[in-house]
Length: 238
Ligand code: IPE
Ligand code: IPE
Ligand code: MG
Image 1 (tube, helix red, strand yellow):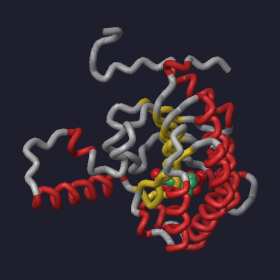
Image 2 (cartoon, helix red, strand yellow; image 1 turned 30 degrees about the horizontal axis):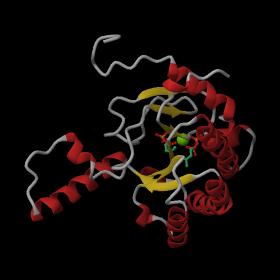
Image 3 (cartoon, helix red, strand yellow; image 1 turned 90 degrees about the horizontal axis):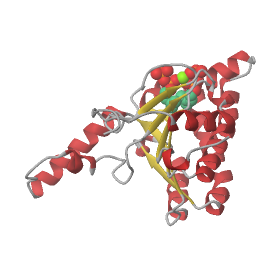
Image 4 (cartoon, protein in one colour; image 1 turned 90 degrees about the vertical axis):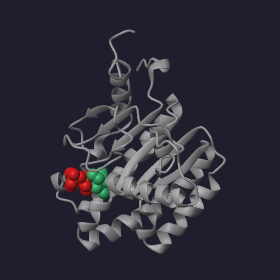
């Protein structure tokens, strides 16, 4: 597939949805859908690295997902640990830096330790930054940022609160805003993902379920993005 390299998104964010439906269609347990979904994660990560996307942010678990049955939630943390164990080598080999956003302190301690370990081991990798959003909520992130800002203001007043200053307090302070958001399995909503950061992100919703969203689907989405015209409120072509 021909991709116009200069028009590729620098940062792609993905709401990986439809694992449960994929499993239900096959009369399987929901966790089987999540397991199949990790293959799609591998494809999308490898492909991002190959084509030259610099930042990839994957919504893996929302704060709202804590309201799912305990059994599913626990299995998801187990799956995350297996994933981290098996992917560290690939991340090292492909020069991928691993990162997380969200209320990580709410995760099981073992998962937290493994996340910290993978982040530490990959911290000098530069070709792609892979960020997993875990126990993430866009509104909580904004509140968390305000709390940090207020704390700092007590020490030293901030003269002018600009967008740039505020952005420094977000989990994503070192990451540019997403250029493209992909949501799989047809739902047309943000589900509390990167609310501040996606003010001007291009949105692409596909009916493909996440476990079926492999390399070809991803390349097709990237290609569609290269044909979008981003105006940011200005007039075309100026
Ligand atoms: C997305 O798939 C993965 C997570 C939210 C953890 P779902 O589990 O939401 O799948 P559906 O929406 O029920 O099909
Ligand atoms: C969004 O999917 C969260 C993740 C993909 C991790 P959900 O399936 O939880 O979202 P809703 O319930 O359809 O909004
Ligand atoms: Mg869902």
